[in-house]
Every structure is written in structure tokens, then in C-alpha cells.
Amino acid sequence: MSNIKKKIGLKNKSLFKAPKNTELLARWHRAIPRKDKMLTEKCYVCEVHFKENDILIYDETILNDRTVNKIKRIRPTLKAGAVQSIFPNLPFYLTEHTII
View 1 (cartoon, rainbow, N blue to C red):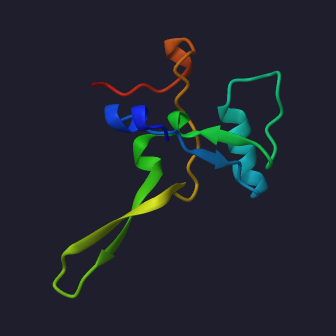
View 2 (cartoon, rainbow, N blue to C red):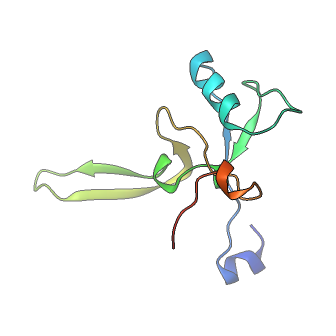
View 3 (cartoon, rainbow, N blue to C red):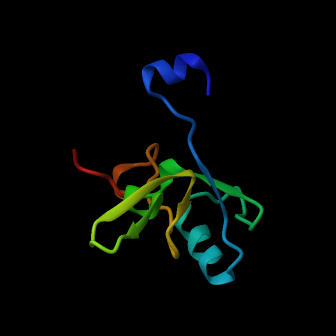
């Protein structure tokens, strides 16, 4: 990340490799509204297309005193079964939106 990005708080977006599981790969393919490209297990999808709660940023451990210890991951990963659902450049009715 460049020094300018660090200063203004921007970060590089994470890319997630398409799943090898054929059922989940088919769900990913159906979720992406593109007719011009076939999604394969060699493809990657950007984090902006996933809900925030589908991305694991921290590893959590419950300690003996029941407190939760959070350690930030070096590289985010997806929760099992996560499927992309956010496509910002599509018509409103074709994608999920977060209300701010």
C-alpha cells in the first residue's frame, strides 16, 4: 500500500478465490449477473461484492475468564458458504443494499 493510501486510511481490496466445491461454485455463478463470462474455480471476486458479515477479519478465542480475545487476520477470509450479493453498478432491484 502506498504511503498516501496509508495516510488517508484507504486499503487495498481483498480478492477471494472462487470455491472448488461445485455446488457453491454454481451458487456464485448464478449470483453474478454476467452473461459474458463463465465463473470457474480459477476466478477471483472482490470483497465489495460480499456482505460485511460474510468476511472474517478477526480470529476470536474465548479465554478461561469468558472474555473474547480478537486478533486481526493478515488476510481476510470468507465464512463457509458465503455468496456474493452486492453489485453497486447494477439497477437497484438486482442487488442487495445496505441502509446507512
